[in-house]
Amino acid sequence: MRRTTGRNFLFVPGPTNIPDRVQRAMLVAMEDHRSSKFPDLSTSVLNDLKKVFKTEEGQVFIFPSSGTGAWEAALTNTLSPGDKILASRFGQFSHLWIDDMAQRLDFDVQVLDVEWGEGVPLEQTEEILRADKKHQIKGILACHNETATGVTSDIEGLRKVMDATNHPALLFVDAVSSLASIDFCMDEWRVDLAVSGSQKGLMLPAGLGILAVSQKAFKAMKSCKSRRCYFDLADMIATNPSGYFPYTPALPMLYGLREALDIIFEEGLDDIFARHHYFAEGVRAAVTKGWELELCAKAPKWHSDTVSAIMVPEGINGAHVIDVAFRRYNLALGAGLSKVAGKLFRIGHLGDLNELMLMGAIAGAEMAMLDVGVKVTPGSGVAAASNYWRSNDPIPKKKVSKEEQFYEAHSTGSVQ
Ligand code: PLP
Image: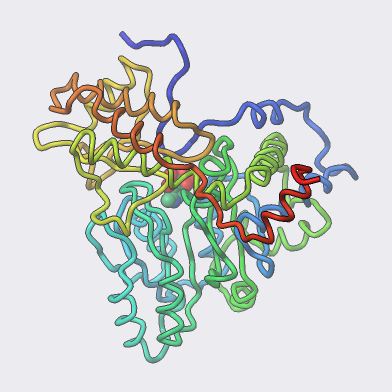
């Protein structure tokens, strides 16, 4: 029998928990999306999303789709069939973008297969780019945070490799499970197409595909021959500047997005990134120090601050842990996908969270593991996470200069 009382503990790495404020903001009566009032909402969210991508020169587009739609929009608006793409594959989402999409759209994809648990291989990428003297590679695809394995790649490093080899390809980055949770610097890293969705760091339901586009990508659009219709940016470019969409927008989602952006700016992006790191470190302590299990991520440099993929011991089926957690404890954990199906389960730690919510996920995962025969010490995960969180600050204290201390003291009135 499934437990149905109490709240469902949602710890898949997206959709994430939606703040009550955002839920309430979405409870709106329908409005005319062609009214003179509508552009106030649409323009404000489109402009403010630029701050989340950290772009001033780029432009953001919102499709009533999911992240997959924004993947498609990125490719079909800038590349032509037959164009060569370089893409590394190290998890289900990098795989889907390459195999299920780029190849079906008739691009010529050079796949760099990497062990699942690692991320974009910078040295190999550099070798390939250096050898591509005629610049046949038109696009490089990178998944910033591979949600299936809990691996974050070094996009800044990838840009450096592209610069070092003087390679002019467009840089496409999947930021679906990193945006608004792990630092993402579109302009600084000169990302040309950054893809995201609403249901992860932006703390909304699924339903918006979000795409940020650089000026260089707009130039590539001019000669792009891929067929497209619904995802044609030209239609957005014709209507968005006046605050309208080429079709009926998902109005409640836009109200929700407005509220979510307000929440994000109230906390501040830097503090959000620090909080996600602090939560992730607590979960990693539970996994490695408490349960003495391994993460799928092969080394600390790959650790993701939004999702941890936890390897189950030989002889245990990860799907069994997930099923018991759901039926017996009303806890939703992320599944192992394709190549790692059954071998792991995932805890999503992104979005609207606190320590005690995560403690529920850790305790529930631990009980489910014990129920299916994983030999972990009862209470060890919770103890390890608690030790980490109790002895670390969520937001590392900033170094304050003497001058700042002086002004702080005077402005707060503690010095008269
Ligand atoms: N990319 C990554 C890294 C993801 O985690 C996901 C979904 O979880 C997607 C792409 C696909 O996004 P959607 O399911 O919103 O279409």
